[in-house]
Amino acid sequence: MWDFAAHIARMADCEAILEYVYATCIDRGATWFSYHFTPAFESQTSKKTFIWARDLPFEYQKRYISGNWRTLDPVPRLTFEHGPILDWKRAIDLGQSDASAAAFFREIELAGADNWVGFALFGPHNRDGYVSMRFGTDPVGFTQGELQEVHSLLLVAHLQICKIMDGGRSSVSLSDREREVLGWMGRGKSSGDIATILEISPETVRTYTRRIYDKLQTNDRVTATVRALKLGLVDL
Image 1 (cartoon, rainbow, N blue to C red):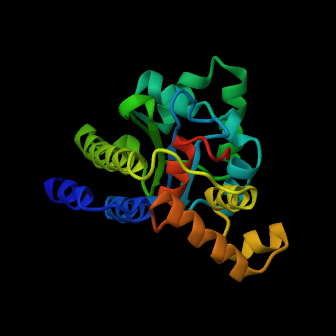
Image 2 (image 1 turned 180 degrees about the vertical axis):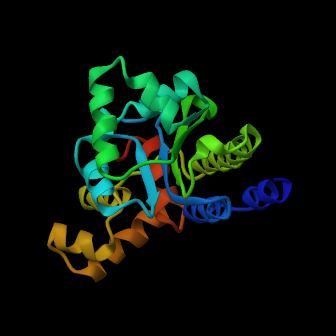
């Protein structure tokens, strides 16, 4: 744990932090991972919440990030109310009295989502985070200490991301096109995808990306996105 925290404290690239965290969680049995960074005074399911995900089934990603599952998902709320660690079976049990929550759980079970755990991450200045993680085996069988250790790792990473977010300039001006590019970057689109969507060349997208990174004083898309959210430059 101390080695992990010391390594994270030396990192200044939010995307690298998340990749490192996920690799560490894979060693503990994780099979997919999503991190939700919540701007101040927003909910974890807000359209303004930034989501970074790895290895989620494609159908799940499509329906959660592009469809309506994000706004229907009761798990972040339940995790903050009853957590900070909430396993899937307890979450389903807590949601049974709410018809919309029960319907959501039925849909994700049909999509093959099981063995997941929600982790609430409280951050400074009301910048909270949330992680949903699926494990290869039922986490109900884990010891409380095992899940608490994972939660501690996630919290260390979230606090470092919050610290990085407060770096950079206090005021930044982006052109309309730069805002468009950054918005699609924050939704997880590649340079090729953005070029197709905006009907411009990939090289032009890369030029805009370099300008965005320069203005936001970073070299990765996650840091750029969370800093832009802080400054109110984009809506996701």
